[in-house]
Image (tube, rainbow, N blue to C red; front, side, top):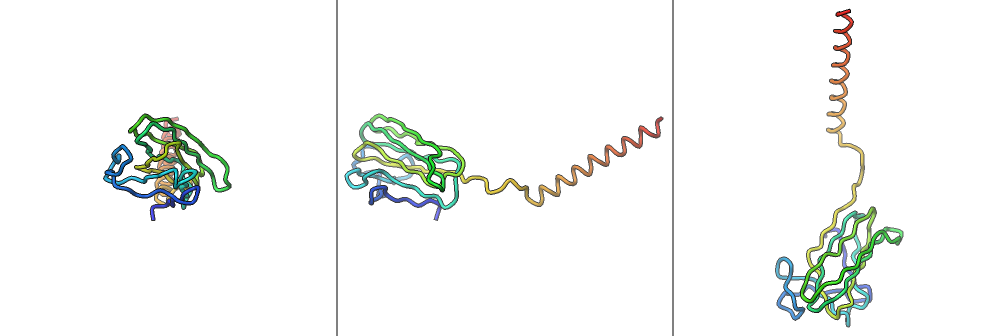
Length: 160
């Protein structure tokens, strides 16, 4: 419904859990986060976007110190961007990626259990063609500039 679909890389995906679970840290916002247990979720999480995006950010954390990774791919499966971060016990950190035409992101951790919260992404620009109202303002502006130039030439001709 929001333009993204989650699925596990190794079969099972994460579960939405209340922050009072045994993950060793509280949610960044609200009460819930997406939780992963690597004994069940082998390989991490996959996020597929319904439209290409340019910017991706997902906050991750673990009750123990851990490393996290994320890779962004285009519609042909080409690697667009990648990142790795290491966090201390109980810390949150951002997996941030940017690049044109991202349609899929895969992320994971070496932690036995890890969580994700506060996903944000920015869709790519669909077109560089101005809206009709912008065209109208541009044409009016060019017309006024042309009229002012023409009037100025006429005044110079009368003065000579």
